[in-house]
Length: 186
Image (cartoon, rainbow, N blue to C red):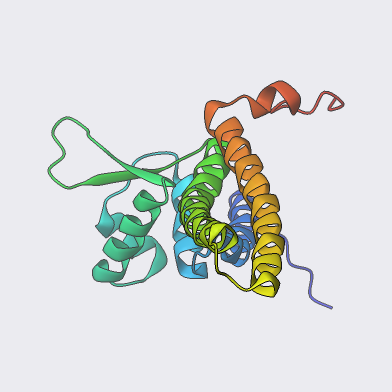
């Protein structure tokens, strides 16, 4: 049996690679490809801003692929362009506040859906109310419309709650209820 002895540098690299791979595998929760997740993880551990050439060299992907992936990370607020005096090439660095990243992802994903669903449901509710208020509408249709209005009212209550939840995250109020740090951590 061969015994492999790793030096500290190899152990550091192995520990980082393990975390980067786990980040990449879990990015599908956010609708992000594993290659973009791997790029984020590599940038996260790099500890300084990187150029597209740096990223290309580190991950062995094309510069075009790096550019597209960095643009995706920036749209998702997981990376930002930074400026350094004397540097001609664009520099990018990973967002390191995971709490803020979660809030941004949660908001980016939910806010448009909430708005779209509320708008569609309110429009449908107005149409149903016009059926209920119509003088010559069939009574059976009016009853069905009233049932649907009740369902839509319940759904709108849910979307109001969800909207307030997203606002609670965006404002940071959530941290009044669930602290960022674990109080039981030693």
